[in-house]
Length: 542
Image 1: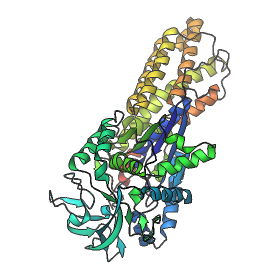
Image 2: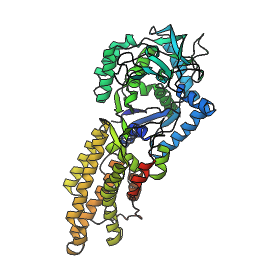
Image 3: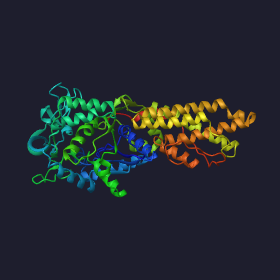
């Protein structure tokens, strides 16, 4: 039975280029989308650029451009990066899109009718040097609890949830000037009254990553705080309520609604009711980094519950841990990062995808090093996979005129391949991408041993029937590897699928004897080890 699947990838801020940490966190979403499509499921894979809020406004002010131009510039850059890396979004949009803004305003109009929404006058951080109200995370100071440096929304050291006015010695994170606090009336959502419902959600979250469960339970144990829905910002979606015309919807209360607005765009293009994607018989995946956990396990469900229209609540949370770079924290402010726009110009997209899926921060923090990347590419992709494919097929081209030899698939091999489809699919659906890709590569290593043991270069002369059988089995292995790896390595898999005229269905495929192979090209090029020093030298704090 075909399933209905919604996959939401986190929306990156459109105030600067993507770095490899973003890709490590978001790649699982594309694997899920490609896998479920191969299973015949009805997939809606959405994401977009987060264009509003203080970060974009501040960047625009620094560069003397409008927030719209800044966010559009990075949105277009993001689109190019995701496209080059093979992200198969059904819709990649932006929060400044008129369709998103209209959806959010309609959602909030209904939300404001809830008894969970109320007005409150509250102090807001204002930087007189920047002449701007600041989002909580753009206020830094000293945590009143542990006396360590903290942001206005949370202390990363002790984990305390904070308000900017609670900080000791608060300053603007942009210019380091002391901030003042100005009273302002805003709409608030009483998240504290949703504690029971949100506790039930996390208790039912059997498919959530462990870090998502731990983080969410900690927030619940500390006591949920009500959150402002509106903000004194010029750059944002206007509040659809009388008396609030000069205020904007707070970015956290509109960006997560992008999953709804983007799914509506896709549904309208397909001519179906988007509400069906938010009903009962649907599976939802949310894919993001560790720092986005509370927005998907507390904020989004709180908004959905308060709106009152029976929205499907977050079901499977696929939240990664942190990625470091050569043993140090990635820092965009210090330009210590590998920018996606740069890496895609030089390196094979499947190579980049493979590294982060096989070595990424899935269950614990992971470190990217150029040495490991080059060794992973040359040893696994090229040395194991590419080598097996090319030596098998080129042998057939050379000694069998490119015609797949006559034989039947070995029963034990067929059983092994069937098991691999089942196991890999199960691991993908559980969010265990590293185990899934490593299981396939374990099979690849077995296939190389099989080729070596059967020694077709010898049996070609001594036992032609055995040689034909070996090569036939190798062709079946390659064909099924291409399908199994397509969610992970779509570009190289597409080449092989084209060579064999294979479909995409998640099932055992067979290439018939007598099939004439087309021209075969090398799947992966070797990366010169000199790259390690060259790329590492570029990584300097600025």
